[in-house]
Image 1 (spheres, rainbow, N blue to C red):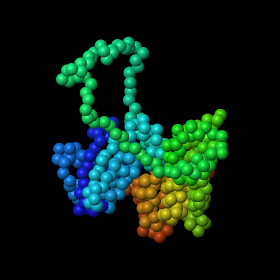
Image 2 (cartoon, helix red, strand yellow):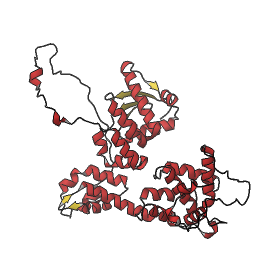
Image 3 (tube, one colour):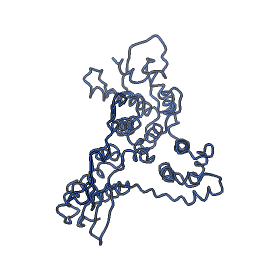
Image 4 (cartoon, rainbow, N blue to C red):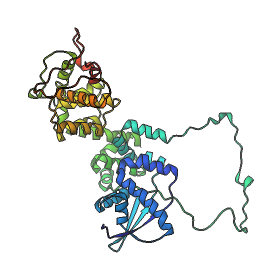
Length: 416
């Protein structure tokens, strides 16, 4: 694709209000701002070209959206991949962009692949909030009596009239974009051919099977094995199949994690001059791994893979120590309603990595300095001019503190 190329834009059907909301709330998090903006721009172009059918240069798009030609090509392919755009090419320099309507609410939320990706992108809480946005409140009809009105009561059909009720001719029709899943199931069916399974049920769920294979990167033989595990009373259970695929993915990927199980080495631990609750808790954060900390936060339940992968990424890519990651975990959970958001964690972790934060104590002091800068409360300033910072002090106590039962949020509130 070149800036000197030309294009035309068409839309199969104008979008209604619900479809625009579907694009904004369900597709935008998946495709990103550039692809979303391109769809909106091409939609406006399609309306314009219904009146002025004339080829225009690609620079019209790149200049309007402030995109490079490479980003424009990537965005158009992303829209095509998710079923919102058909791209046709005539000769080597002319394109036809045909916009497709987004999936209906029902079809989108019944698409296991798209819903799983959306949940992974925006989080479980935001997904639940988004789903609630599309729900409508209806009146309880028990106190009402329905008026039965038939078609014949209101309308009559006169085919001899100039404008009969039923009109023949070209009518615009809604054409939803279809997400094509390119997954070869030949080996999958070959693996199952000797099994006494209800193949008609399995073929009816072929779309779901392909979605799970793509979503969890499962090979055909593994998919066949998971289908066998999803049989109950001789019948294939789609809900059980989705759960079985998720568990298989979780098990495999959890086993591939490494750094998240490590504790802070002795040479990287902080040196404390007092034994106050804060020092005890920071020492505790340097004595456990991020995995152990997350497990304790959940009352002994296994941490979810999403949280473990965030910690693994911070330790592998930004080279943060386990103690520093543990401080980050507690800080983010305190500030973000007990939700470990990947973008939030990565933003803070990248700043700490640039500042070469190596110990839990240094990470804690950085959170205090940040809060002092962005909060009207008068907190004690942190003196960074000394090579050996003075110990942080909290209210003295005569009782030994169970360091696993407190967190930075409560300690930060007690700083003098």
